Image 1: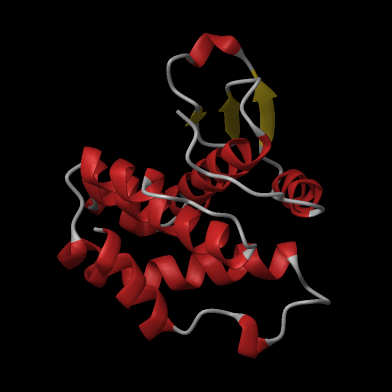
Image 2 (image 1 turned 180 degrees about the vertical axis):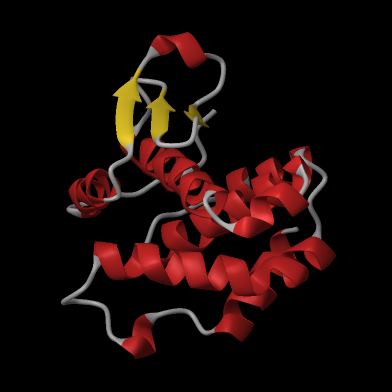
Length: 161
């Protein structure tokens, strides 16, 4: 069931370009089913045939894993933390580009037992990584006033968690 809706417009191509600039290989394969996406450290696999908005969210989630995987924090965090952070970053980006997420992203966070407390502890990482992705998506278009403030993101994430 796809709960992420809306048009990603040029953001898909910008995201794909950013992934390429990061020298991350992107493949579309059925071999990862039932997962929608997977991150392998320098390689992202996406399940083909997803609706546009769902695919975009999956790409952002897996890109977040790639971006966070290279940090020193990786060895000191749990799968719960990593999945919660990646999905929270997807949430921020999906909202910023105007997609409707329903409860899909919150449901995913709950699946991995993430919660508001964990989100609050990870807010700085979520905000920094989201800012890099947003800058890649909309460098000439998005002004600072359009980016969600940290307190807005924290409040909205806490509400869904």
